[in-house]
Amino acid sequence: MQKSIIRRTTLVIVMLFGLLGSVAGCFLLPNRAPSASFVVVYNVDADVLVVDLDASSSDDPDGDPITSYLWTFGDDVDIITPLDYSKSVAVPVLQVRYPAEGEYTIQLLVIDERGATSAPVTQTIMLPNLPVAPTP
Image 1: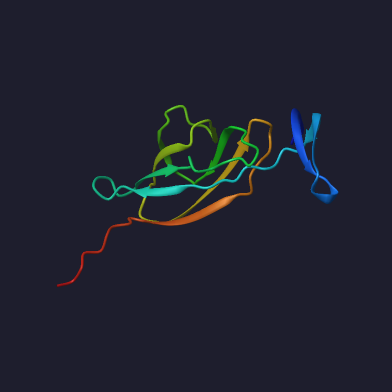
Image 2: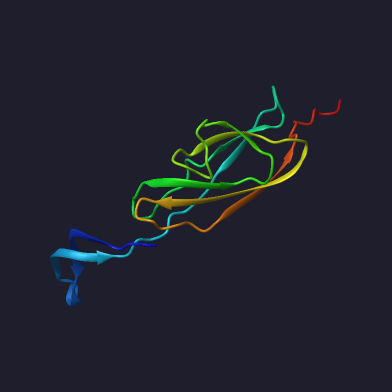
């Protein structure tokens, strides 16, 4: 459930004829939804089925902290960090290991401290994602 918040603030209003005025008081401001985003960092040096997922670039237009990151990975994915993982985590970075080579879809939703939820963001990855050596 989204919540609105009453914030004490001063609004500066430009009135007709260019006169400047201000109004102070409490105003009901709606809680806008945060924006989810994440990057996938491939592990090409060790276990090619391990990826880091970093959602620290997710943000909230109201400046509210992001309190939950809701990840959807598919079946049989092992969460390496954080160790106390559940479907919802309070940290933006995860390390996961996929069970086999192939194509996988990852989805992320984020929730701000006032309960607004982002639109889902989805990426499809292919494992292993090994760099291709240039041909001589």
